[in-house]
Length: 327
Image (cartoon, rainbow, N blue to C red; front, side):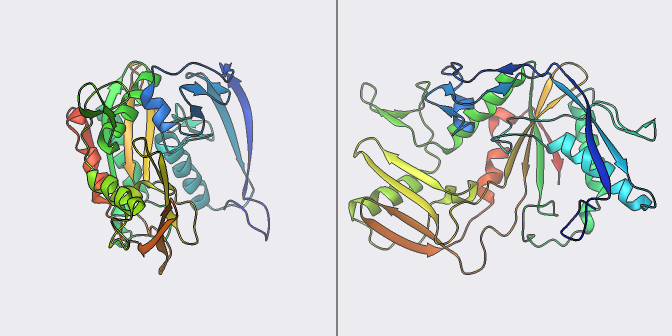
């Protein structure tokens, strides 16, 4: 459908209209957006944006012209793909972390309107459920797919709404930082704190201790890897107290994208909703091992990720007013 080495795609795509795509230059001060800085690692450094970006609110109109003698099944699949793009998708850098989120406003097939913007969180939940029924999610093999894809193991929740998409994404980033971070020690208070001076929860203190003990030589052969590996690779450490660095990745694969997707969706009410989606899949090829290195120390262990460490994030008290969409 999308083309291959045998020939081009069975449809042609063109951009027919662009409005309000206002570009902001790099070098913007985002120091008050610690959550965005956390989610935007690589495109936000030390509280400053490193690339130009589009302000929220821009609109793009696409036209898909389907070739002659193409089956109705192909047309239906393309419509489904566009709905999925508009409910979960994004464009540009850090797309899985909410940046560049796209919201479908209208879908016309041969002039007939097939989509309208959800007015509230409840309608958004219903639209997502309709899409998952449309792709027969309940009939998909329950085992983990070999690549990032929807399956019966998927988890989708609408966790929060807000009036400003930037502030909403920043709140999600702060909550993820609360969940994952060990924090930095505040000498005056004698506790570890987050960048905005809130006491760190240290939900993954065992990860911190494992790597610190490996670097110090107290642990020569770990039996497991950090649990936070499940959020993606590489997974890096810097210990301010010892000035030591450590890297956690795979023996042959330097990157494994996160199975957690963050999406900010525009509602007809003028509000925005934050959608969290977990797409479990085979994390690394069979036989691949997790590698931990730093300070002249090195260790390898079998890859044993637990997706429950991501699922627990969906159940944060900050998301108590949200809605479970699937399952």
